[in-house]
Image (cartoon, rainbow, N blue to C red; front, side, top):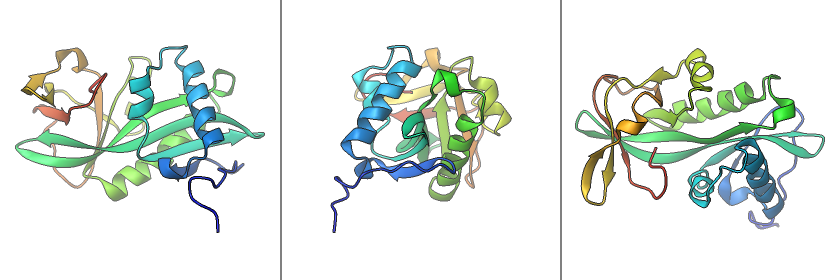
Length: 189
């Protein structure tokens, strides 16, 4: 019997492989981090990488090389006076020479299934360049104010207004109301 921490993550040619962070072996974890470093052109902080861990990863392999990564992690959101279990999408990227071939869509399809089956809603913070991609997939732009439940209390995050998108689930949402995320180091959204 092999330990989950030492079991190799083998490439699958038929689409993204879903794997929990606990099942990522050291080579796969290193490949994901290197890929994201390249995709984000060196703008991947330690905190950004940490935010992508602890949940489910969608990995796309081609010829034994990792060419796509996305993850969904659990976070707590506050909306309309109630806490909501949120599947928060992080670290979505496809190697530059493999973009436009449906890999990003395949990873998101896999993660959206996880979000719909396990969470009250999905959320993510999208760059201006990626907003249309998410909108075409049914993600809705949050129109109300965003906030974070910081150590000192609720703090508005106006710098994120217009960038947060949600994938509604069974819980009714007022997209013009306030949406607050839980605290974390680095970029809270």
